[in-house]
Length: 196
Image 1: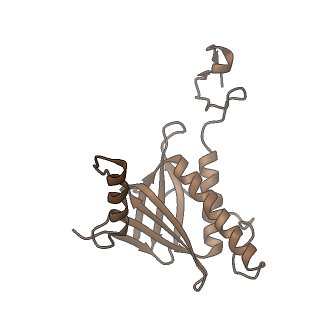
Image 2 (image 1 turned 90 degrees about the vertical axis):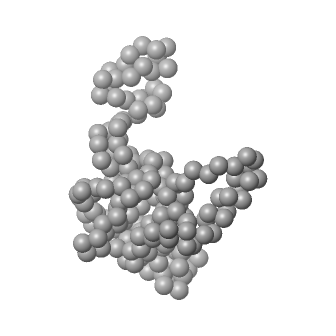
């Protein structure tokens, strides 16, 4: 079976969003163009890492060009995309590996998210070889979402993604663990229940 690549160049909309209540949210990347929409599931930490790396890469582009690139130094202060994910949210795959690149000729950010794949290997060396073969297999590799964004689109994506990550449960002021609505057992309080 050949590899399924969901390619958007450029998407009409590319956002990170969630389904569910804080503490039980499922995170998604969603790309859409016209009637076509692709949603892939990933972990909260992956969304945060992706947004931070996008900002870092764009900052480096601005630095290397001396500010002469079409990449904004910060996300636009205009009202960003705060709409929920387009429904229905149907998971195409769960993300395992992500990659970022900057196409200097086209002035575009390239984001790739590949499906999580379980590999069997006897040794760490065999596992590393299997991973490398899998990532290099353009025809039979795991499903992939590939999105090409302008610098402004990438900045807007990163801002929204960080906002989505930070919109979860508030941290406990003592231990920084997330507070549930019914409170939590705080290790800094020696196990006494602390209200929200």
